[in-house]
Image 1 (cartoon, rainbow, N blue to C red):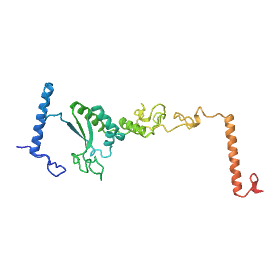
Image 2: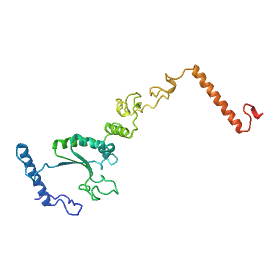
Image 3: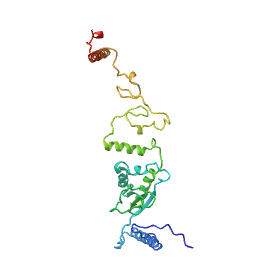
Image 4: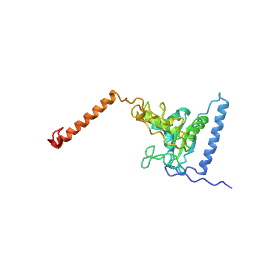
Length: 262
Protein backbone atom coordinates (compact mmCIF):
# COMPACT_ATOMS: atom_id res chain seq x y z
CA UNK A 1 0.00 0.00 0.00
CA UNK A 2 1.23 3.43 -0.86
CA UNK A 3 1.41 6.16 1.74
CA UNK A 4 -1.16 8.94 1.36
CA UNK A 5 -0.08 11.82 -0.81
CA UNK A 6 0.48 15.20 0.87
CA UNK A 7 -1.86 18.12 0.18
CA UNK A 8 -1.14 19.68 -3.20
CA UNK A 9 1.14 22.72 -3.33
CA UNK A 10 0.89 25.06 -6.30
CA UNK A 11 3.40 27.59 -7.53
CA UNK A 12 2.75 31.18 -8.60
CA UNK A 13 2.05 29.99 -12.14
CA UNK A 14 -0.64 27.54 -10.97
CA UNK A 15 1.27 24.32 -11.62
CA UNK A 16 1.52 21.70 -8.92
CA UNK A 17 4.96 21.51 -7.34
CA UNK A 18 4.74 18.39 -5.17
CA UNK A 19 3.74 15.75 -7.67
CA UNK A 20 4.91 12.20 -7.02
CA UNK A 21 7.62 12.46 -9.68
CA UNK A 22 8.91 15.72 -8.25
CA UNK A 23 8.98 14.33 -4.72
CA UNK A 24 10.99 11.27 -5.79
CA UNK A 25 13.37 13.39 -7.87
CA UNK A 26 13.96 15.75 -4.94
CA UNK A 27 14.43 12.89 -2.45
CA UNK A 28 17.01 10.93 -4.45
CA UNK A 29 18.70 14.08 -5.68
CA UNK A 30 19.35 15.14 -2.09
CA UNK A 31 20.69 11.68 -1.20
CA UNK A 32 23.02 11.72 -4.20
CA UNK A 33 24.24 15.21 -3.33
CA UNK A 34 24.83 14.19 0.30
CA UNK A 35 26.89 11.16 -0.77
CA UNK A 36 29.09 13.28 -3.04
CA UNK A 37 29.63 15.86 -0.31
CA UNK A 38 30.56 13.08 2.10
CA UNK A 39 33.13 11.74 -0.38
CA UNK A 40 34.67 15.19 -0.81
CA UNK A 41 34.92 15.58 2.98
CA UNK A 42 36.66 12.20 3.34
CA UNK A 43 38.99 12.84 0.38
CA UNK A 44 39.90 16.53 0.35
CA UNK A 45 42.21 16.00 -2.62
CA UNK A 46 39.28 14.88 -4.76
CA UNK A 47 38.16 17.55 -7.16
CA UNK A 48 34.46 18.17 -7.19
CA UNK A 49 32.55 17.65 -10.44
CA UNK A 50 31.42 20.74 -12.23
CA UNK A 51 27.77 20.12 -11.50
CA UNK A 52 28.37 19.72 -7.74
CA UNK A 53 28.42 22.77 -5.52
CA UNK A 54 27.97 23.36 -1.83
CA UNK A 55 24.25 23.19 -1.38
CA UNK A 56 22.22 25.47 0.82
CA UNK A 57 20.56 23.79 3.76
CA UNK A 58 17.43 25.20 5.30
CA UNK A 59 15.19 24.71 8.28
CA UNK A 60 11.71 25.98 9.01
CA UNK A 61 10.55 26.85 12.51
CA UNK A 62 6.82 27.44 12.85
CA UNK A 63 5.79 30.54 14.82
CA UNK A 64 2.89 29.71 17.20
CA UNK A 65 0.74 32.69 16.27
CA UNK A 66 -2.45 30.64 16.36
CA UNK A 67 -1.89 29.69 20.00
CA UNK A 68 -0.75 33.19 21.03
CA UNK A 69 -2.25 35.65 18.52
CA UNK A 70 -1.50 38.77 20.60
CA UNK A 71 2.15 37.98 21.30
CA UNK A 72 4.62 39.92 19.14
CA UNK A 73 6.92 37.12 17.97
CA UNK A 74 7.97 38.98 14.82
CA UNK A 75 9.09 42.02 16.78
CA UNK A 76 11.25 39.90 19.09
CA UNK A 77 12.94 38.17 16.15
CA UNK A 78 13.49 41.24 13.97
CA UNK A 79 14.28 43.68 16.76
CA UNK A 80 14.56 47.47 16.62
CA UNK A 81 15.24 48.41 12.99
CA UNK A 82 16.19 44.79 12.27
CA UNK A 83 19.14 44.83 14.67
CA UNK A 84 18.33 41.53 16.41
CA UNK A 85 17.92 39.71 13.11
CA UNK A 86 21.20 41.11 11.75
CA UNK A 87 23.08 40.20 14.93
CA UNK A 88 21.92 36.59 14.72
CA UNK A 89 22.90 36.42 11.04
CA UNK A 90 26.36 37.83 11.79
CA UNK A 91 26.94 35.42 14.67
CA UNK A 92 25.85 32.28 12.82
CA UNK A 93 26.55 33.15 9.19
CA UNK A 94 23.04 32.02 8.24
CA UNK A 95 20.25 33.85 6.50
CA UNK A 96 17.21 34.32 8.75
CA UNK A 97 13.90 35.42 7.26
CA UNK A 98 10.23 35.35 8.19
CA UNK A 99 7.96 33.70 5.64
CA UNK A 100 4.41 32.49 5.44
CA UNK A 101 1.00 33.99 5.99
CA UNK A 102 1.20 37.31 7.81
CA UNK A 103 4.85 37.98 6.96
CA UNK A 104 3.76 40.65 4.46
CA UNK A 105 1.33 43.39 5.48
CA UNK A 106 -2.12 43.28 3.98
CA UNK A 107 -2.39 45.27 0.78
CA UNK A 108 1.36 45.18 0.16
CA UNK A 109 2.74 43.65 -3.01
CA UNK A 110 5.02 40.65 -3.10
CA UNK A 111 8.70 40.82 -2.37
CA UNK A 112 9.84 40.08 -5.90
CA UNK A 113 8.41 42.19 -8.74
CA UNK A 114 4.93 42.11 -7.26
CA UNK A 115 4.84 38.29 -7.21
CA UNK A 116 4.55 36.13 -4.13
CA UNK A 117 7.54 34.04 -3.08
CA UNK A 118 7.70 30.37 -2.21
CA UNK A 119 6.23 29.64 1.18
CA UNK A 120 3.96 32.67 1.40
CA UNK A 121 0.92 30.37 1.49
CA UNK A 122 2.35 28.29 4.34
CA UNK A 123 1.81 28.98 8.06
CA UNK A 124 3.93 31.78 9.49
CA UNK A 125 7.46 30.46 10.09
CA UNK A 126 11.11 31.42 10.34
CA UNK A 127 13.26 30.22 7.44
CA UNK A 128 16.94 29.62 8.23
CA UNK A 129 19.31 28.92 5.34
CA UNK A 130 23.04 28.29 5.40
CA UNK A 131 25.90 26.03 4.36
CA UNK A 132 26.98 24.66 7.74
CA UNK A 133 24.53 22.39 9.61
CA UNK A 134 26.13 23.37 12.93
CA UNK A 135 25.51 27.06 12.21
CA UNK A 136 21.90 26.29 11.30
CA UNK A 137 21.45 24.46 14.61
CA UNK A 138 22.88 27.45 16.48
CA UNK A 139 20.58 29.88 14.66
CA UNK A 140 17.58 27.62 15.27
CA UNK A 141 18.36 27.54 18.98
CA UNK A 142 18.47 31.35 19.09
CA UNK A 143 15.14 31.65 17.28
CA UNK A 144 13.42 28.99 19.38
CA UNK A 145 14.42 30.79 22.57
CA UNK A 146 12.47 33.83 21.32
CA UNK A 147 9.36 31.78 20.62
CA UNK A 148 8.81 31.05 24.33
CA UNK A 149 6.00 33.23 25.71
CA UNK A 150 7.22 35.29 28.68
CA UNK A 151 5.56 38.16 30.55
CA UNK A 152 6.83 41.57 29.51
CA UNK A 153 8.06 42.32 33.04
CA UNK A 154 10.26 39.19 32.99
CA UNK A 155 11.24 39.26 29.33
CA UNK A 156 14.80 40.55 29.55
CA UNK A 157 15.28 40.20 25.78
CA UNK A 158 12.36 42.53 25.03
CA UNK A 159 13.51 45.04 27.64
CA UNK A 160 16.96 45.12 26.09
CA UNK A 161 15.37 45.72 22.70
CA UNK A 162 13.40 48.67 24.08
CA UNK A 163 16.60 50.08 25.53
CA UNK A 164 18.37 49.70 22.15
CA UNK A 165 15.43 51.40 20.43
CA UNK A 166 15.64 54.32 22.85
CA UNK A 167 19.38 54.49 22.22
CA UNK A 168 18.86 54.55 18.44
CA UNK A 169 16.19 57.24 18.75
CA UNK A 170 18.36 59.30 21.09
CA UNK A 171 15.80 59.25 23.91
CA UNK A 172 17.82 57.13 26.35
CA UNK A 173 18.83 59.02 29.48
CA UNK A 174 22.20 58.23 31.02
CA UNK A 175 21.18 58.84 34.61
CA UNK A 176 17.84 57.50 35.72
CA UNK A 177 16.43 56.27 38.98
CA UNK A 178 15.08 52.76 39.22
CA UNK A 179 11.35 52.80 39.95
CA UNK A 180 11.44 49.22 41.25
CA UNK A 181 13.83 49.52 44.18
CA UNK A 182 14.34 53.29 44.33
CA UNK A 183 18.11 53.09 43.84
CA UNK A 184 20.32 54.89 41.34
CA UNK A 185 22.72 53.35 38.87
CA UNK A 186 20.51 50.99 36.83
CA UNK A 187 17.30 50.97 34.84
CA UNK A 188 14.04 49.25 35.79
CA UNK A 189 14.70 46.24 33.54
CA UNK A 190 18.20 45.83 35.04
CA UNK A 191 17.03 45.91 38.65
CA UNK A 192 18.16 42.78 40.57
CA UNK A 193 15.07 43.04 42.77
CA UNK A 194 12.50 43.14 39.96
CA UNK A 195 11.53 39.48 40.48
CA UNK A 196 11.84 39.43 44.27
CA UNK A 197 9.23 42.16 44.72
CA UNK A 198 6.52 39.88 43.32
CA UNK A 199 3.22 41.64 42.84
CA UNK A 200 4.02 44.65 45.00
CA UNK A 201 3.73 48.04 43.41
CA UNK A 202 6.73 50.02 42.30
CA UNK A 203 8.17 53.00 44.11
CA UNK A 204 6.19 56.11 43.25
CA UNK A 205 7.85 58.57 45.67
CA UNK A 206 10.41 60.94 44.18
CA UNK A 207 12.04 64.00 45.68
CA UNK A 208 11.53 67.15 43.63
CA UNK A 209 14.81 68.67 44.87
CA UNK A 210 17.44 65.95 44.41
CA UNK A 211 15.50 63.41 42.33
CA UNK A 212 15.99 60.56 44.80
CA UNK A 213 13.15 58.06 45.26
CA UNK A 214 14.14 57.08 48.79
CA UNK A 215 12.35 60.03 50.46
CA UNK A 216 9.67 62.65 49.75
CA UNK A 217 10.51 66.28 49.04
CA UNK A 218 9.76 67.49 52.55
CA UNK A 219 12.35 65.11 54.07
CA UNK A 220 15.15 66.03 51.66
CA UNK A 221 18.47 66.84 53.35
CA UNK A 222 19.13 69.49 50.68
CA UNK A 223 15.97 71.41 51.53
CA UNK A 224 16.74 75.06 52.47
CA UNK A 225 16.70 75.77 56.20
CA UNK A 226 14.41 78.30 57.86
CA UNK A 227 17.12 81.02 57.88
CA UNK A 228 17.87 83.69 55.38
CA UNK A 229 16.47 81.54 52.58
CA UNK A 230 13.21 81.24 54.45
CA UNK A 231 12.99 84.99 55.01
CA UNK A 232 13.68 85.69 51.36
CA UNK A 233 10.97 83.27 50.29
CA UNK A 234 8.45 84.82 52.69
CA UNK A 235 9.34 88.30 51.46
CA UNK A 236 8.94 87.22 47.84
CA UNK A 237 5.53 85.71 48.59
CA UNK A 238 4.38 88.93 50.29
CA UNK A 239 5.55 91.01 47.33
CA UNK A 240 3.71 88.70 44.94
CA UNK A 241 0.50 89.01 46.97
CA UNK A 242 0.84 92.81 47.05
CA UNK A 243 1.35 93.02 43.29
CA UNK A 244 -1.66 90.79 42.68
CA UNK A 245 -3.86 92.90 44.97
CA UNK A 246 -2.80 96.09 43.19
CA UNK A 247 -3.50 94.55 39.80
CA UNK A 248 -7.01 93.47 40.81
CA UNK A 249 -7.72 96.93 42.27
CA UNK A 250 -6.76 98.56 38.96
CA UNK A 251 -9.15 96.29 37.10
CA UNK A 252 -11.98 97.34 39.40
CA UNK A 253 -11.17 101.03 38.93
CA UNK A 254 -9.96 101.46 42.48
CA UNK A 255 -6.74 102.87 43.76
CA UNK A 256 -4.22 100.38 45.00
CA UNK A 257 -3.78 100.34 48.75
CA UNK A 258 -7.06 102.17 49.52
CA UNK A 259 -9.96 100.05 50.70
CA UNK A 260 -13.16 100.73 48.81
CA UNK A 261 -11.30 102.83 46.23
CA UNK A 262 -11.23 105.95 48.44
